[in-house]
Image 1 (cartoon, rainbow, N blue to C red):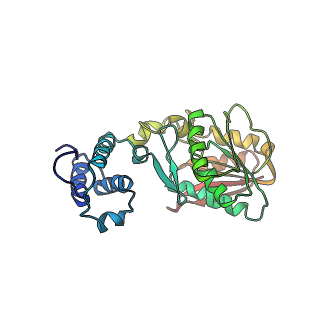
Image 2 (image 1 turned 120 degrees about the vertical axis):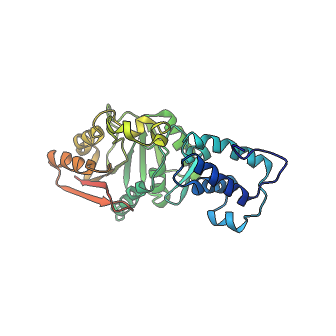
Image 3 (image 1 turned 135 degrees about the vertical axis):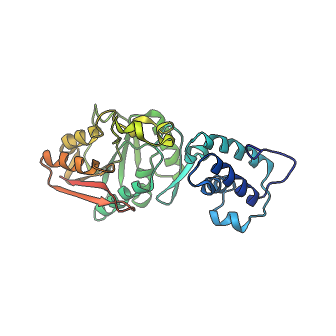
Length: 290
């Protein structure tokens, strides 16, 4: 049997786990058991432990049909988050589609550092550049309801998903605006500018994982040049946009990318610069103070 299909026989959770592990293994997935567990957890609205506490539970035929469709998509390397239509970020659920970047755990550090930076500010003003699903802005807004947040993105379709997520979480202190940051500037002055900008160079795009390259929005991954265009732009316009003592909080790439961004800002005369590690202890967040 190629995939778990609707049939006269009953499929228990443990049957599907065993079948899925074998099927994904046969198709050369690195973690075949985790693949089927992830799909089943979302399908049944269970946590992983629930799968094994209820391993004899029979899965309804209509859910088998959904699982069948999901497995076919995953075999083509579509990311799990796009298949199920959601993911978790900073402890909250966010809806996704192929118009927005899939939030990574390391990006949660941007939220951590932002919250610490505005800890003593009343009604802080925050600009997010390239909001995508809105996960960064919404995560901040849920904790700091007094913050005034402007979230911009070049993609109208991405903003539609961000607004859906904002409505789902009932955040009322975020404004979403379509804007090409490389060509125009938002109105206003801010205490914090936060961003996970496109930082993969055009050369590196050829070597990224199929799951990412074939499915995630290219415009959210690369600047189609050297991976430094947004940082260059920010280094020029930050003094116009930030209040006195304001800060940039930016995600940077891996390998030598953090050093390149650091040198770029230093070359523009910035000297209050810090690099912060992500949860894997890699230097992935840059904070620049005016």
